[in-house]
Image: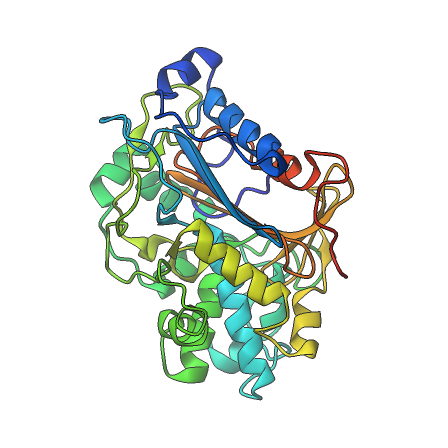
Length: 391
């Protein structure tokens, strides 16, 4: 199961096996994986056989750090992927944004029970949407009922189709414009009465961070998380359309079941804003999730709030906290995770509850592959092999 998140071509089925063969260009021979991770390496190869151009994964556990790649990073040259590839992480950005807001609460600068209107008066109104009734906690937990701007037909036609993307890929979008697109539509439900994923929630959360601190959400993530943790491959790009090197190319078929993959690597990240604009690599994501789940970024109260979850009706067995998903894998192992989809890039990060066993993964295509299979392989692949979590 994969909860689709930010700006991927929603509902895109996997390509047929024949197309998968054409895309899975041969990669340079790689060393045999460590026995503890052999199942994970096989799952990565299976993703490439299913049609993913290329994949990269890094795992950290008490035994050490292990990385693997499969497939290609560039369909034009056939160049391989690298364990050090930087990539757009999509909705993994949400975990960073939620952490900053929880830090601000711990400092007494805001409360998650504040309403949106307390910080951004008049922003959320119209068609039944009412920021006076929606709390910051509901934004972070996707229980606000605010519609998702990426579901707006005009947004999808302009930015998530091939023709629209060709014309508008470098267009800068202000957060207020993204919110306005969402508010053309009635709420999905009354605040606090249900759950539905909405990227608009985190665009607004980023705006709250700026109002509360006087600095952009990008600056606050950088000074509070990226710099202290020495996440040297991680950035919050503003107006920068390229992915820093080392990196691979990213490809999309814009939701089609068949079609020629289109290189979507370069784009203006403002179309995702605080819901999914960040860039990172797998080693940095491992370090961040280990620090967060290991209790090094938040006091006990806020760490508890982070892990207070609600059920996701669309995904039995998965619950959503504040920028994190609570999952039980096929073998019963419990992980905290988030997925991150943006045009041309599919990512996932996961950690055991104590943060001692982490995994970060990226596919450089958005139409194929099964990230859950890779998680199951790593945490469940060999009976009794997973590092026990200390709850």
